[in-house]
Length: 255
Image (tube, rainbow, N blue to C red; front, side, top):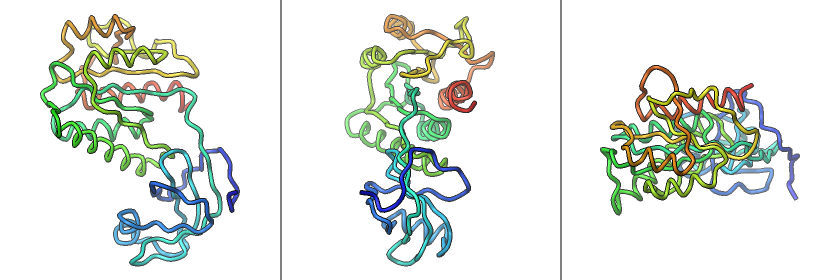
């Protein structure tokens, strides 16, 4: 049994930093050690008496006060614990692999704007190619970016970043979502007018800088993905997903 009160409400954002541990002990006294502890002590220079949050990235968040800060890390006395459920409507981003550091940038922006799951996609016109060991390293980098952005934006849940998928695998995965949308500059229907469910899942597919191939357009349409446009401008692949997620969050979460 928890030693402190627990509820399912999202803690109010008051500027308190958030730290993530792989496992969050169910105790009133927590130690934030390792890289998180060093960052708290050496970079943020937190001192006793300051308020912080410590989470596991899976919805559990402990609030408390720093009681000690030193070489071992940050010691926190927990005053409240929250078990925040996942949102009723899951937002999924299928992101074609951007060039270089634009990949982690796309992940950071999507995380800050509410994405729940990110699917790296090896589209045919991607300049970046993840083969063999590069795929594992690329996914690990995206996962690290999602974790860091979750801390920065005080998110209780770190978005899932899946393994990289082929076009065929993406089309198969779209069968499991309730609404699938693919951004396309020639689409006639705007994203803002799409009817959205209140629960379930919505997936947004973002193509590469070189655009979708004709075969991918056909395959995605056959998988049930509806072409939509964001606006008159054509955005980079690293920012288009974030723009779409912002539009969806305004309608489903930020009201």
